[in-house]
Length: 120
Image (cartoon, rainbow, N blue to C red):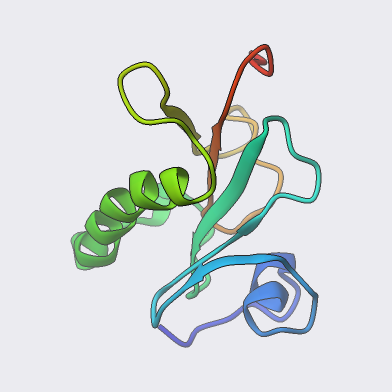
């Protein structure tokens, strides 16, 4: 998973060229706090390899994608989300212009904590 885009802000964060408040890191995945949080807990979970969006996923991505989905609830609890079912968290992955994607590097927003932080 070494492919990076030199013009991508998230690739620069993974490479350490732009500072971030790290939540988690392994060989394939990186998580960091959102700089403009919408919720008491708000971090981003991304593949280290540059992949523009969900639209580019292939069957070869199933392994790390599965790990990411299992990792998300663990990190959410560690970051301060309350346990299910009274607590919980929201995961958002915007894809493409019509999906509201602003950074063209696949990422999930993981948000939680006491409401009323909810937005659309």
